[in-house]
Image (cartoon, rainbow, N blue to C red):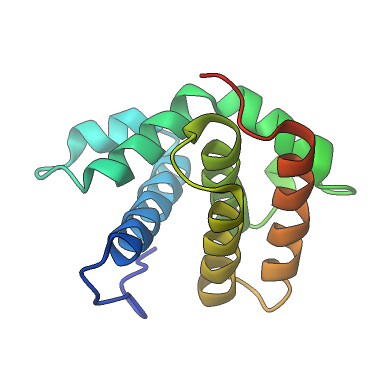
Length: 145
């Protein structure tokens, strides 16, 4: 999967973070598709991606069980492994940023995941991702690492 279409071209921190999230989405999707740990995909790259993309991929990999448990508890009527692959990765990135990342305001983490879902997944994905991440944020807020 390549998320190069529709990329922000800005040089702002917001644009850089958006590109880092897109790259993390690519890498997490690749890891799952190949059945590899996220860190393994990073280790195989000839050039390391943006530091924030690396932090997202490594963070999701490190906290994957807890992240999937949170998603599973809030994605009513959907088992995490039955979600569309893109939605699952976006929920993992958003959940990591909400519960473990601590660098990004909750609303920004949710909004970015919703925007990426609208761009790279189905028409219904944005509202689904929003509902799940909002429920996770309401329950957990930032957790200690």
